[in-house]
Image (cartoon, rainbow, N blue to C red):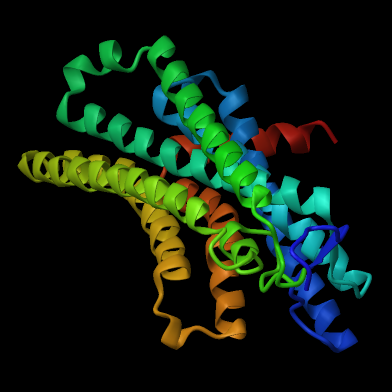
Length: 310
């Protein structure tokens, strides 16, 4: 093909060719999407409405739920619509917007999870300094820094990815637009500049990962020193949901991007992409509310209030 990007749309990978399987994919994604909307929506409303939950931990959780809700809304509705209307097309501007939004929201999500590890570290290892280190202004600045870093990161990558000439057709081997799949369509050496940017981002992500690991080493060391079993249980119930969410996010993302090419296949790539892009936003609310008594109580109050209105 000629060395240009004159086409007006990309073709995304479909989950199925037969009508029955397309409708099954639509139904499954609809179920997951509604679960994510309900779970994250309830957490956002409960935290916003219950003044007992106006603490740093729940402020960050509110931000995480907003990011999760936005990130699943970036990829899933378009894929559902394509299955329903039996098409694979996404417009060029639509692809740019989807790639930018997904990268922005996932980056911000990850930076926010790093901030939440710091919050848990201060709460357990430096409890006397908690009010000073995590005052409302400090929390606002940390959350804003996570959102802003994600935005700048996504802006740089999106601008760089789409400035590269694409000459390998317009078929994306993924159910949504993402950087590695767009780079596969680039001309020979043009993608090296973007690879350089990706390496910088990976180093930053690795730095955040090391920070989270070191925070948890110190947290668990401090928790195991707590004399009462009740105190240890309370400390673990504060930390384990966050650790579970981080593990799910990091393990699925690392497997998607760092798995050896020898085990790569279109079907496996598709399953893995669902694991890291669709499952975490839907599962996170349940992980956080499962062991959290304060959140459960706030959700019960919210549901009782909603029932009393009818």
